[in-house]
Length: 324
Length: 228
Image (cartoon, rainbow over all chains, first blue to last red; front, side):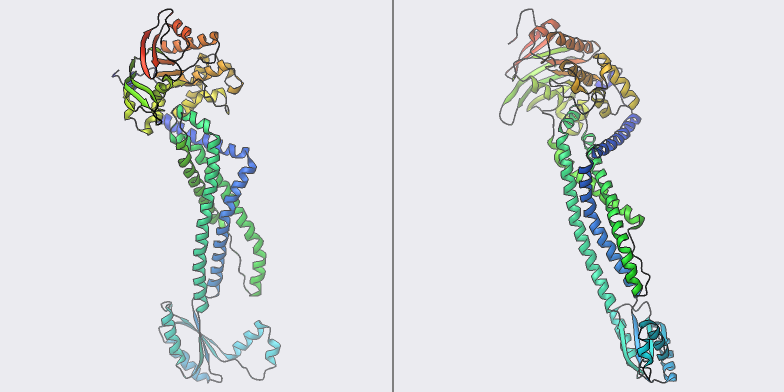
């Protein structure tokens, strides 16, 4: 009995690497199709589980999308701070020109725009709807204004504040307004919002894992006999695991696609109202949807969650099923 | 092919199913295993299939010491041991063909080879024309033969059968035994657990008898002898 059983050759079947690979490939395809077939056999139950996945991921995806759009609004309006310098009423043209030359020579300043009282009045009349009220005025009440765009290097609030004070020190200047607080606040709110959404996404993702894990657990229970037989005739753990992982994979695919659909329907239904709102601000802002890349990312997230949920359930419950 | 060296099996509840069993079954031998229920027949078979591990002693199958096999190697060991179960262990969610094909799919046999081998095995047990039906529609004897086809389809060097004729009438039983004899004649080592004395005697094969977990008889039964 010292002979190697494999060396006996003829009667003993031998399987080459190529055949193994082919069979492995074959079993993957068969498992994927079989798992999908089983899901298709119970469409309502499958749809409900997939909807749980879809809703759980559509929610944070929608919130992230909303945050992204709000950020775009912020960028459109004013991403770099501007300093508005109101000069004293009745300032002499020559004095103003001199002051403009001084400012233009400063390295801290990137761009300088002069709005004369006449220009200001004109644009006010054309835009604000106060044209009749304005024509009733005898004198132009608007001061000459300079709009200063600081150099890109001047991003720190302290630097900007120093520049503001230097400009305010000039005798011509009535008031200086540094219009950047709201940008800073918006950015802070966005950061906070993103963190909240991430936390929410984490919790909802955990929920998805539990739902898929539980669904797979029930599936394992209902196929207990099959698992025992497969183990008795020499099936590896990987062979037993495969169809269940594919079930998780398909829940991910279906849930992901449904999730994309939910988000897209939401964006499409909000698109009209947002355009109308933007129009009242003389803006052509358009709501951005997920796009192709976003959809792919969402589906991949769902698949990853589906696979992970299935993996956890299989790891937890398969070892408990052994032939007796 | 099958060696037990002073093997004992004690279950966690303290029940000792096997006590110091030493035996050897040579390659291409056909051996019956008898004993009353509870004598340890099933435990002995489970040790060979690595469903259980011995508490003490060594089990060596085909030169491989099973004590040294890690749990990841168990599936590959089981592919070397074909098993026929008393309750058939067939899957009723698939056809006869798919039941028999299962061990080949698991072993990674090429698709075109699977069909050929499954039909050869079904032909051997006389069920070739039933390959498309669900095994639940078959009689007990036919189901048992599907189980046999599945056990031999991968051409394992060792074939175990646990009470393969337990629920069958004498005619069917001797047909089934004839099948085992044919496999044995092409070199398969066959170990059959049974307590059908008349059938065992008619086969004229070596008999191992267990009693309360101990091997009490080893040899060919003579006419009229009932072991234990």
